[in-house]
Every structure is written in C-alpha cells, then in structure tokens.
Amino acid sequence: MYKEFYQFREKPFSLTPDPEFLYRSKAHKRAFAYLEYGIQDPSGFVCITGDIGAGKTTLIRAFLNQLDDQVKIARLFNTKVSSRQLLEMVLQDLSLEFHGKSKTEMIDTLNNHLIETFTEGKRVVLIIDEAQNLSTDLLEEIRLLSNLETEKTKLLQIILVGQSELREHLQLPNLEQFRQRITVN
Image (cartoon, rainbow, N blue to C red):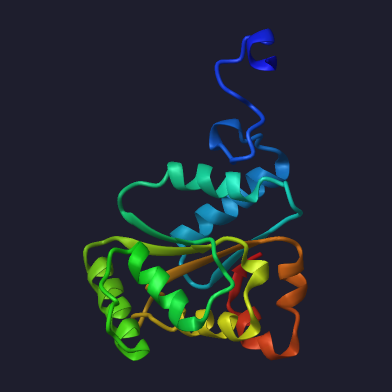
C-alpha cells in the first residue's frame, strides 16, 4: 500500500537485508573499510560486531557484491553445528567433495584447494555470520583453520560477523590465542 502511495519502485522495508538500501553511516563506512583491508591483507581474523538490526548482514552483502572473481567466498549462517559439520559446510560452499571423508581428509582437501587457489592468484574468504552463536570449541576449530598458510601468507581469510555478545565471548581466558589473531575489530 505505501509502495504505491509513495511511488517506490521497490519495497524498502523488507525483512530480508537488501544491499541496495544500505545506508552508509560513518560506522558502516568504517566497517566496510575494515572488510576491504582484511581482504587485501589476509594476516588474521576480521571481526565485525553490532546490535541486532544494525545492518551487519546488509553490509556483508554489499561488500560481496563489489568483489571481483579473484575472491572465492564461503559463507556460513548456521553456527550451531559440530566441527565436522562446519568443515562440510565450508567444503560444500566451495564446491569441494566431502562425502565419506574423515575430518583429516576434509582439512587436506580444503588445504589443497587453498594452495591451488593461491597459485592461481586468487583468495578464499570464509564469512561466518551469526558468529556470536559459535561455541568456544568451534572458535578453536576456526582458529586452527587459520593455520592453513604458506611461508608468507594466510591461505584462508576469516571474517566473523555477529552481535555485540561476540566481543564479550571472545574475552574468555581460553580464547587468548584466538584474540591474538584478530587484526581488525
């Protein structure tokens, strides 16, 4: 009804985040710059946090829309999973085979893919949305994935996106090693 009244071409208040309607506030511009920096310098984790409805998912979608084909993306939305399920979802998103493989074999498959992608001059980015729901054990598994590297660079750039509770969760004493790897927060 309001769409016709105000002569909108599209529905501006959808529950599904649409990057076309992203308002680039000062905070959004800063977060966007952090994402760009994280892609250009894959040396650690990028962590984007904010309150519910702050536009984190919309920001990520806008960011993904501007990436070129030199960047391969794996995205996770379901974060209440086991470490095996996490690996399966990453491999599936990268169109890699995982059926019938052990966890070690899946990590080898991912590592080989990352090396191959790196030699092609491309990068792989893992974006984990709703990261505030990650268990401490799963955060440790993700930290271990960040060990996949060459002598000079990380092969997998990991971006965590979550509500403000993520920041609090990362302050737990047993996540010290994880915190040390966050380069952009």
